[in-house]
Every structure is written in C-alpha cells, then in structure tokens.
Image (cartoon, rainbow, N blue to C red; front, side):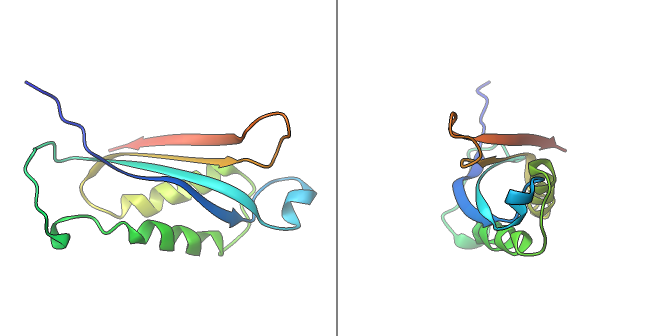
Length: 120
C-alpha cells in the first residue's frame, strides 16, 4: 500500500529577534531565520478546495512575531521550543519540526542553528 506524507511548511521566515548570551547580542535584535514543518495526521488523498477545510497558516507569522516581541531569548533552543508550543495549538498534526538559525554570527560559515522535532 502506498504511503502518503503531507506537510505544511514555512520556510526561511526572517525576523529580527533579541537573542543570544553575549553582551553584544543583547544590545540589539539580530536576524533569525525560522523554518517550520508540520506533518498531517490525516494520510488520505481526499481533499477539499474550501478555505474552511484547511489550516489558516497566517497564525504562524503573527504569533511568532508577537512571541519575538515579548522578551529576550538567551538560547535558540528556548525559542524553538516556544514556537513548538504555538504550533501544537493547531489540531491535525502528528509531527512538528522547527529550526532557527542566526546567519550573522560567524564570518566563516553561513549560519549556526538549532532544530527540534516534536511527535505526538
């Protein structure tokens, strides 16, 4: 029997966030790149073309932006786990993968980051 995998994703969402443990990082927000994958529980191929039958993904951007304005984050790990909590509020997903990266930390590499996968 064929296996179907369906996911919703948000890729390369760039947002200035107050994050980091060094004094220089606490002076001003820095660019953080956020990626989210949310895998559906429903594995059927049945679908609807009605907006009422889908997930409104606008909440991800607005809720994450609101979260970013609430506090300073010392660690990317903490930020990722808080984003997972936002995603968990949406029913119908069996796995959520969230990663963050800070592209401006080191001159000799593209980015440094963290990723967490939550299954339930």
